[in-house]
Length: 127
Image 1 (cartoon, helix red, strand yellow):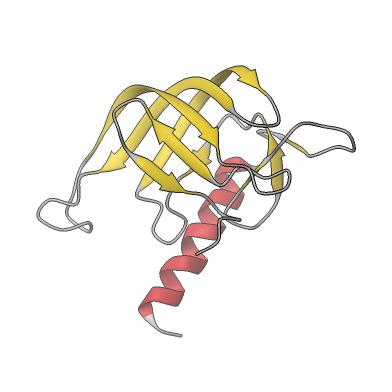
Image 2 (cartoon, helix red, strand yellow):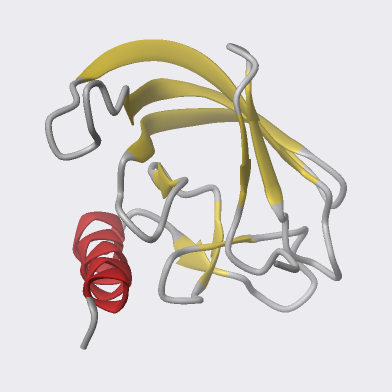
């Protein structure tokens, strides 16, 4: 197993542990969902890992004020590794942000945009 594969597996496992019990699976007739790193469709999760391969970008404690079929928006705390001088030695500083999920494909949001200007492709997005 190469390092990239190990990081991807570790990131997925971390999200599975972190996200356990924080959201409900998409129910029939429900609006759009967001996928976690393991591919589970979730509605209004309290946490979203934005970089599944390494877990270096996470939004926690999300309080959703809107959730629809085209877009969802809420406030949370982002912890994004600055990767300076490298991601292994970088620091994450908590930052209060608005996270907007959009660009649905079917009923799955495929993009997260933070109000600090950062954008992330979410699981389920065409790569």
